[in-house]
Image 1 (cartoon, helix red, strand yellow):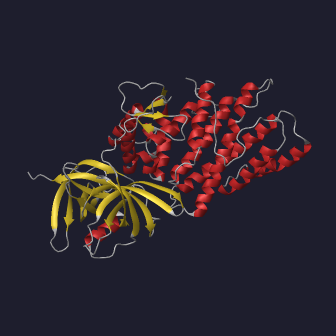
Image 2 (cartoon, rainbow, N blue to C red; image 1 turned 135 degrees about the vertical axis):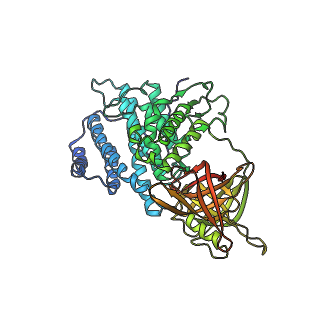
Image 3 (cartoon, rainbow, N blue to C red; image 1 turned 180 degrees about the horizontal axis):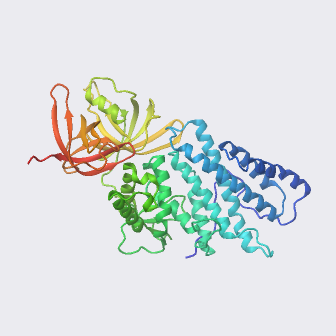
Length: 522
């Protein structure tokens, strides 16, 4: 079945697609657009985030000017090139953006996204006129126009991911429609001048990023994933039928304003034309790279970003292997709730809190439990500081005591995802690690570098979920998984234990979780 060529866009921008005028522009219009050329010439070597309002103004001027089609496309190309540079300069600033995103930052992000959306619409409006044009000189190569539209939409989505915000309404549908137009005109595999990726690979890059659940990664991790996808994107492809023998299967409904769905969690609606994406090859690629890194191969020798060598980079690759190769099914039903809880964040803060349970929790914040399952909670922020919270952080949660009952124990969790739709709103998903924990001091002997110490939390066994004890440490403290180490527990009644690691259970940018057991004495 041919992809539907009907393109629907959000109503907030009145101009969707209009026929480019073919008559020469008047002298007045040339004078009207002269400031665009002068501004671009002055700003050519100096791209700044502050350029976004000017770019939006110039794009609107270009839309309203009565220019020749060729001149209009030329100026649109100039504005596109500068806009991509400006947005690329904004992305690094989103790396450490606190939650919730401030009103000023969110306005700046939305302004840049509106610019990208407008550019995408203007390029998509060129497609039909390009194919229908009887002029000997085409306005713009159709594959280049669609490629640039998809590039703008991919940047739009990336900004949302980095800001822990849901994509704006209509963006996924625009992306699917642009790709559908490319499939209709058989343009997906054409090479684009000065670009390494084809249009198909550019589209699949956004799909692969969506498959790994961007809200469950920090901004730094997302930057690494975006770079890594460029390495493995050529190993995946879109299919019209379910391929046999594959586990990492996702499906896309091109007519929905939504990304991808894991086939293991949701079947496509009956009588709906969908595309299937098999990510098993991408998962194998990540597995091969992780195996090589753990054997000591440097990242540059594997053509990987330097971040891949870090413990946090290893953790990202592990999660990509799972998300792409075997998308998880929901194990437990969620139960809706509405009760308050106190949250304390950070390994150091939790260590102090558990070491002195009668003390007030430092920098505690108040949250509302929205739903819960055996694995964790979804929570909404009510009050207190949240600027220090990030995906992958260790936190402790204590539900509010009822009717004068003793306060419940602190439950140790990891922040699995975070979303902030507006400056006053944050939601987080937590995975429970243990209903309690013991603060400990860890000492490990490094060959040639003496004794290294650090704070750790010892988690109890939770059969059958975790048949052994587990140890939570700062990321990198047990780098290389030493054969054995010592922990000291308690203040008055001190307990000294010799342990060794069995396997690594979890790695984030903040903490690592190891399954451990007592060192067997000879």
